[in-house]
Length: 495
Image 1: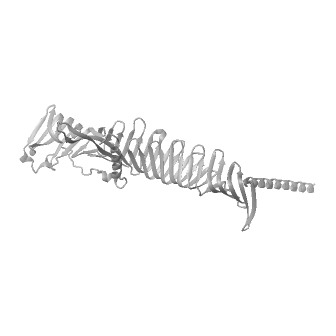
Image 2: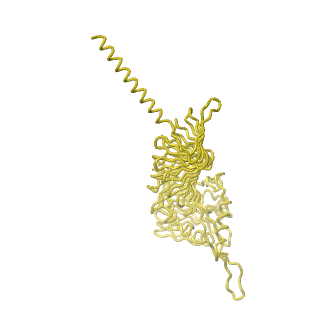
Image 3: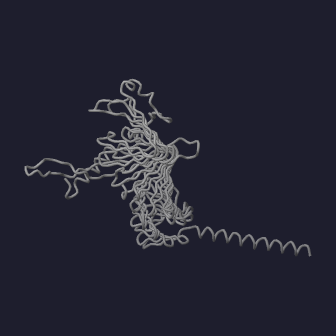
């Protein structure tokens, strides 16, 4: 009885061994490439057996199929060199090249002779690349270009995951989509959602509004029409308008005029920027915001720019936060919030609301500052600068007087509201409303004592941002402006 049991166990062991061995052999056979062609020649070089196969060559391994004109198969390494009109397919994927290698153990194709990948969703080309069929992952290098239905991406190197549509690009990365161009040192892009993350030397430009944004990090969410830029971002928008210039006066008395291009650039730098590109088209800058546009400049903690409406809003953030500061020509303004209205790329109205204060330095007499304070100030602009200022709520003012361009003392006034009129950038009239009071100080009491005539809140801020300071070495403004000017003057009908 014991002898029969022992024999039976041995038989079971042998059957199991044979089954496992057969399975392993079957698996090895599955891993091996099947190579067919019109003719095959076997040879041995340095102890390695090779098979040379001639057209039409067909190599299959699982769901991978490769055709080419000529192949050399290294049998022990399970590797094939592919020569001439190489086409590799897997389901909807097609890879083409003129010369490459296929590694059967790794299920990997490799080429350094120019390669194209087409998966019916994107077309990916490069000077060289690898494709891993099991992972459905491509690693392409040198002159990489990925094209789909809505964008084109170029870079030095790119890793593309076919299943997820995720692309990781590095080195001189550029993605063009509609009117937006994103450039960076590295970038992650998702084909289906269009979401993009970019890092290091980021640049996003929009041809529709002539804007460029620089920064260290970018996140773009097209479905939400939202873009976030951080790490010292810089916003630049180049605007142009035409002014009529008088050239010569004809004998008849009529004037000969021509249109002259005038460039005006908006520059904003902050620690964080956001752009909403839907119907509202809002641009936001937060934290240490600095703005320069022609004679206009600002420092504040928060700015919103409504590009479609031509409005810029700066707002004090919190009760203990610093007031927004606005400079225009030789004037300085502060208030809880400042609303700037633009028309045809020019400032038409400044609306300063809450704890408003304006001081203006005289161009000739630098120690003389016209001052006005109130709860709200509206400044109206014409083509030649400030035309009218309206002040509301607890108005206090100090204005220096001149007679025949010579100083003639000052007037210190208070009222419920006031209207100040300007001519040639100088005060021409001051109108006070609502129980006004006024004091006149003759020139002999004012000369040399100008800084003793100040209103509460008077403070000269000397940290006015300059365009050169904001731009730094980031942007060659002169070159860009020259290019825009050249393009404009090449337009028909413009002198």
